Amino acid sequence: MHERRGSFDERRADPSGSGTSASAAAGSSAKAVGSSASAGVRAGGGTVSNAEAGSSESVEMGEDERDGEDEDEGAGEDECADEGVNEDEAADDDGSAYEDNDGDGAYEDDDVSGSESPESGSCLSADDTESNESEIKSLSRLTGCKIYAKAEFMNPSGSVKDRAAKFLILDAEQRGELTKGGTIVEATSGNTGVALAQLASARGYKTIFTMPESTTQEKIDIMKVLGAQVVLQPAVSILDTENHFYHVAQRLAKTTKGAMCTNQFQNTANTTAHYMTTGPEIWRQTGGNIDGFVTSCGTAGTLSGISKFLKEKKPDCPVWVVDPDGVAAISRFVNDGQTTSRHEGGFEIVSANQGSTIVEGVGVPLVTPNFHQGFVDRGITGTDQEVVDMAYFLLRNEGIFVGPSAALNVVGAVKMARELGPGSVVVTILCDGGDRYRSKLYNRDWLKEKNLVPRTDQVASPALSLDFIASLESKTKVVA
Image 1 (cartoon, rainbow, N blue to C red):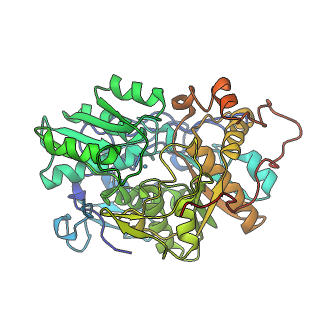
Image 2 (cartoon, rainbow, N blue to C red):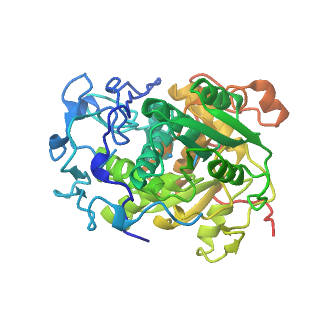
């Protein structure tokens, strides 16, 4: 675990035109919190709940206000050597550009002017007059715990990846690899591409994205609307240097004039984004009252950044990774003591299950430099059927419309809550919204073809149950 915080000058963490806003989503048991924040991306910006702001309006804060009780986090989640973070290139060698001066998990920026959007990915709230937390009340009631979820689908580009996109671009600018009129190249399963394309447009860059052919058409269409060039590749092993979308991105970055690859898998600025923003937000929004955190991972930036921060604040807080059962690569690696990887073709590879998954962008059988920045205690799995059932459970009972990775995360949260026991506080991430999966997860014909018809598709059923969520561990055969 390294204590490095980022290779870019973090005092530039709120440049003009970068923009994060968030209003909290609302369902049958959750009220909206706040309203849209101002434009200009701040990966740590977003919506402050009424409990924080003291009113029903969104709040914008100057940089010098962050040491008060409404303090945001430090700066600003689809996912070569480790080139993401270099202490010698940071704003200060000792990391003093951001300091947690009052110990509340919020980092003070001593050299950034201008206004700051309120909190990014602001949580869903059971009662916006009393709580700034994201309780999913039906799940809390059924588990006897408090289950909270951070609404990252409310960010400007619609996903948790806004945070990483901002830090990756700032990193490239600070290194001098990205200049006005240049081209950003990235390998993505969709959300990072959308986030990069939106921010690139505001900052004068062109974009080229390589993607698996299995990516939903909705994501592809959004990127094209934002001006990106999209290159689709077959789903093959990352060791296939000719055809895998990661390697195609590397080649395009080298052969396209004025281009560079932000390299979200290897660049630990990805982790820094969540260490500086998402982790501190969760800590503050829960008041430090958190008994466990669980999320899935692809590049591992979200997992590692949040886990690193939470473990610094509360070392005994368990952090779990939840994998699609059809892959279960990282979860098994964690449970095996992180000793079962092998190095091949310049990558750290782990064995995967002999199956597949409908969940895009997670469960990658690859241990990234980002992963090594964090702390994970246990790995669990969720089946595709559990993912589908949870997606429709949330839609019908909470009015929460999210994608498959978010549904997988909530499955993980329920399993963690059962394990920790009644009264525990569990937090997870709602990575993106369901509108990007209308052709798959929310398409009945497609689900029938996959034999994944939802068992929870009833509006406000009087007899709610979580019987559709099974055991913790994977039962699928492992690929040698």
